[in-house]
Length: 386
Ligand SMILES: [Zn+2]
Picture 1: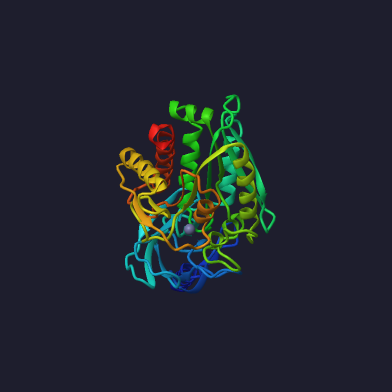
Picture 2: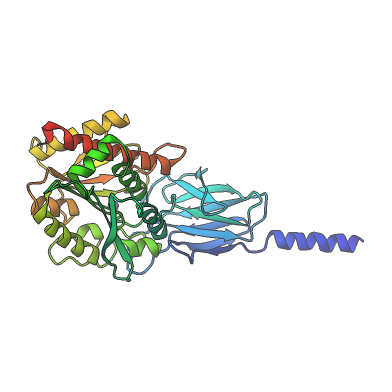
């Protein structure tokens, strides 16, 4: 009997401490496991082909003890940040957020309860995958105010969606035109939730949105770098050229060439007025409010237009946007548009805040996108903007 108890205890011990399994071999997945020691897991974001930046991780664990806890040691070797939460989920759908118990510039330590789950998914922030974009676009297909079409195909042969929002029954010709692009940097996930909110507002039954669709046409490329998003790469600073350093004649990336071509041809038949490039830089950077880069001289017409727009946004949102006067002159999308189409109301880059202090960040990011879309319409319909 004693021997049986001993064997049972030994089996229990062995089972409880069998090696935890890890996998990031799924859409958007990324991890490099450095060591697993019992319930301690040392990991970092994996470098992948053509990558220089190294921040995005998304992986799953199984074969861990139930009703226990795991300690995750995140080694940081790209940019130092300490204000990062880690996101985990037992079903890859409903996510929970937790702070590092030991935040550090180079090592963050998180503790996760295992509950009675079989699997835990872990990510840098709420994943927004290529499939999620496709599902979102499918959900819009029945709306007759949107044309869901294809910009072009990526280097790895993925479809890059283009959305065109306008009331095609309205006989306003030519229409005033906006161009909006997002996710040039693959790991900048909040940008896509913001863009969803913006699109939902443009398509809403709000009287402002109805008016907008009659008078205006909006072209939206919600995910420029589809390959790096799908393949779990961080994207920023990638080789041979970062997406947002490639805005020039004879651009390297197909998505950029095609955006440039289509803007050129649509600007021939519409009144091109506004260009917006939506990003969401790192955790710790520009947190808590929307940041915009102003590439125009102070007191220029465009600077006044931007002030007007962001004044409207702060009234609607109770957030005072952060303005950065950017004179770096790098081949960013905003600078390309400013130079090629000097008559625009403005061309601007936005940074959606990463850490918002909100319990449900994805809902909050969408809300910011909606409020921004509404601000844009109020701006466009105000006399001052003309
Ligand atoms: Zn970016």
